Picture 1 (cartoon, protein in one colour):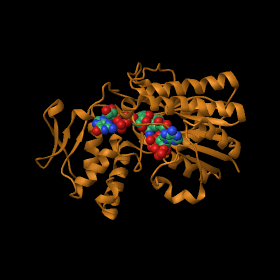
Picture 2: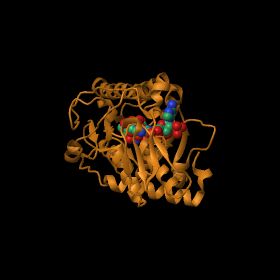
Picture 3: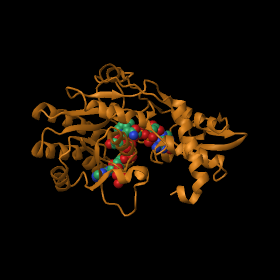
Picture 4: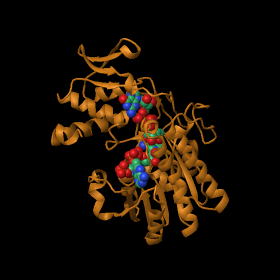
Length: 342
Ligand code: NAP
Ligand code: F7E
């Protein structure tokens, strides 16, 4: 039985990957940092089949202990401070977790067992003000926020440990991927949750930032398989994981409202733009949600992953919006606003 250690178990991707690896017959260890509340909602259904272990990417001693105790065959490093706006308000901890955290694990692998295979959750945010369109594995990085800059460090230190010490280390350069369990701060889930609240009469209107930003949005459930495939190849390499389609925040809003049969009309411009349904304002723009530097458009070319890993995205844009809105409607209906709107 192969053993895999996942950092970031409690996050969106951690839960999808844990389920995927359990289905493949792995013994799964999920790293969890101490929190004051129970945060295992995403892994509730598989919690009893996973070994939950304590550790923190900022605490090298905890990583040494874990690698000695578990001696995993594979490590998937999904833990990070992953919310871009928080990387401006907490730039140093973002650099420490998202950037230096990668080095800590790699160094512990090198010292304890350099045969452990390592997956690093790299990000399309590294392309930032993108130099090519679509972006490929050869596109130069131009990161535009402290999160992306920390990810660039993580990317290069992963490559360096492969080149310098022969560690089987891969970067998955994943474009945005969403799901019903996406954090509610991220734009797609903020929209699906708000649309559900409006549809059920809990709320009248919600606010967004830049409606024109474009992202290549895929489904997190499809992307977990790509992470695993990278570590099953003969040689370690880096891969773009994307859908090859880009859509604006505005399109996601329209699609989410279409799911509940509430077609939106846009009126006005810039900060004064509003979205209306049946003459009533349901969306406003608030400059509070604008970023000091925006990444305007990301679009990935997943050809290499298709060719070499045999991986392809299965879930289309409209299906993702439908899945998310329907999930939020069901959850709000069953649990009520107070239970879910924390
Ligand atoms: P997420 O939902 O924000 O989950 C992040 C995870 O990291 C959580 O389990 C969190 O624990 C954990 N974590 C944060 N700081 C930690 C620390 N100091 N020590 C140990 N664990 C820590 O992120 P996600 O969407 O699943 O993304 C997974 C990874 O892929 C992240 O590295 C992200 O940057 C990267 N990525 C994501 C996307 C995307 O579109 N989702 C795209 C490209 C790359 P708590 O639950 O305790 O906070
Ligand atoms: O923003 C715009 C915002 O926060 C997407 C992380 O998983 O993917 C994610 O980073 C876009 C941006 O994700 C609001 O300005 C408009 O252009 O959902 P997001 P992100 O910043 O793209 C990458 C690949 C990662 O690696 C990250 O870890 O939407 N936007 N209005 C808004 N965004 C938010 N959050 N809230 C708004 O109200």
